Length: 405
Ligand code: HEM
Image 1 (cartoon, rainbow, N blue to C red):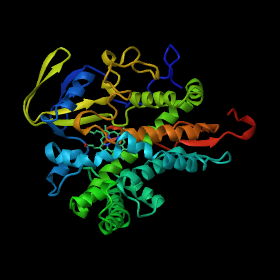
Image 2 (tube, rainbow, N blue to C red):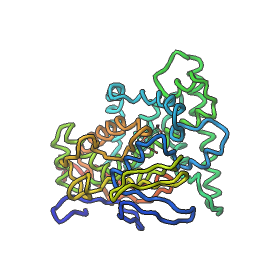
Image 3 (cartoon, rainbow, N blue to C red):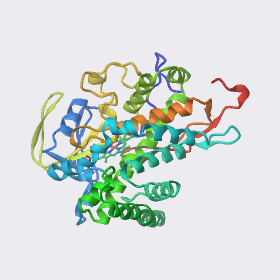
Image 4 (cartoon, rainbow, N blue to C red):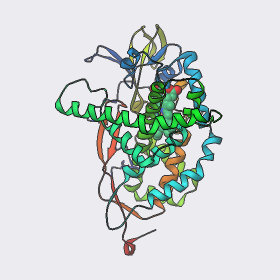
């Protein structure tokens, strides 16, 4: 366990070449110059300037060249607002309605842990995230375990790999084949079922069918929800479990606390270890922003790299010891406990309430048992989310005679 001098656990995940300052920087790179913003206030002001910037991350440039309606993450203005209607499916009240289903699922998945063999927690957390997001999106007409495997292959490939090597080609073919099977075996049956029952409106696919989206547009929207909601939640559950397993005092507090205490711990874990490490935006017009040392003029066409990892640990907003996991920290009003881990402004993550609920429920089921990790998870850095990917996190139930629960 890595702890501060005061005994608090600190950030675990740091990419090898990360720079933590200055708050504003203009740097050159292989694709030209870019701004890097690391101050919380500045990053949030860009995310809230929706009329001045558009999406430049998650492969946006390649997608813009395609002749189809882009998915929600890449839209702006009225088209984006129309698409956000689907996001109403994630209100706190509707999210709360999923609780019994999520509790039941968490118990079933955690019930697979054994004392005589290790189970990779990330396969359980991915299955949890896929099943919950699939319900919200409307991918409910096919086998969930098979769909999880197809999506895992899709997200394991790097669809944006630009350098040809035999390995990237094989990966690309596997990704394309997984996409095709996902369309044919998961998305298409869901579309067919909704065309037969056009009165349904309680999931994303129903709403897209009602608005006459083509099959290809629905497929890309489903893949966007998959990438935005499934893999991210897997990382969130895993990183929070890792912090808890690595720190007996934090784990004891999690077990003894009520739901609010547990939520404070998982939210603070996500602030400290944001799954999406950077967001990228490109300026549509010249815009002047309030920088920490005076106004900053961003010109039309400039690329802006919003360093969420740095903004979430900006001492000016977060307060003292920003790299420590302190569930009791008090943040300024209007700054959520997860700070910018779910973004801000018009693209703020609509799935945040469900991801938080799901994580708290899964970890409550997990830590109702006495579990031990055989080692830390494997850590890789993802070029698309500009954040981390965790896998191979092996857990076992403690043998009954050593059990402390
Ligand atoms: C811990 C889990 C999650 C994290 C860390 C996360 C993070 C984010 C972030 C940072 C954005 C903003 C992207 C930007 O501004 O460019 C975003 C957008 C989005 N998220 Fe999440 N997300 C999570 C879970 C979910 C879930 C469970 C769903 C749905 C099932 C979801 C669906 C979406 C969608 C559809 C968008 C695009 C919204 C828009 O463009 O208007 N996310 N997410």
